[in-house]
Image 1 (cartoon, rainbow, N blue to C red):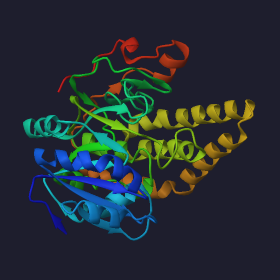
Image 2 (image 1 turned 60 degrees about the horizontal axis):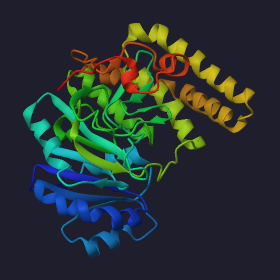
Image 3 (image 1 turned 120 degrees about the vertical axis):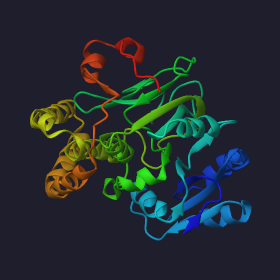
Amino acid sequence: MIVCQKDTAVVILSYNGTKWHELFLPKIVEQANAGYEVIVVDNASTDDTLTYVQTNYPTVKTLSISINRGFANGYFEALKQIKAKYYVLLSADFEVTDGWFQPLHTAMERDENLAACQPKIRYWRERENFEYAGAGGAFMDKFGYMFCRGRIFFDLEQDNGQYNDNIEVFWASGGCMFVRSDLYHKVGGLDADFYAHMEEIDLCWRLKNAGHKIGYVGSSTVYHVGGSVISYGSPQKLYYNFRNNLILLIKNEKGSKLLWLFPLRLLLDGAAGARLLLTGEFKQCYTIIKAHFHFYGTFGKWLKRRRDFKKIITVRNEVGIYPRSIIGDYFFKKRKKFTDLQWQPKKL
């Protein structure tokens, strides 16, 4: 067990991440004087991650996971061994900036009902643009589709200070998530069976079903490389996108809404598969079918998880749910930017 002397543990999950630590760990360690301790968790790497960190950064604590069972499981196992008031889940391919930590910490200290928050996330390769994983605050539409300010589907906005505010959102990016440790463990932590992708949304949804807030703090900025483990647009990404989104709904959505939403989502997923088939993208179509059959084969497990988590539901906090269809707005009404939606998020 690692017991942190400071109230925050910045926990970096790493798989063959030496190249990222060479780039980004110096700044993370330099900024630690702001009030956090750094812990690198080696997720069964085959490179020299642990040796590199232990040799070059003696102030950084380390943990090792013996078998890599994915991003979600890595954090699930590691956070059981770390004691701190707050965790910051920080992926190895993130670059922090001067002063990134304090605005997030201040937001958490100011509001005890704020369970988790994220900073502004920009794209490391195109530094003026927002990044896919969280961008300027993350939401869900009425049909269970996820999107962000600054990134709707494939359109990335340039950051011109338009999202420098602090707002309440539906979910915070797992790439850089500040979360209260007691609430994290109370609602069950990350679901290791997600493997990767959307596991942070599942966690945030459970926190919101327990009546808590999720926030975005626009005065803190980090940069994300992105796609360093599961590349954007890959069949693996597509698989987890479709499978895990269905799991999200079954585990967390209201029963009365699921009665009509779940059959509709099956139809919409079928339409997406048919479009890929007609355009000759057979591998992608097969990936969607594979995702669905895996979900059906494990349906009983997810239904049990739903029953298990019902006991934590108090007053569902539905702030951050967009009341229309983001697919309809984007593809049919050509609303490519968040400002085009003419919908205002709630201030923190």
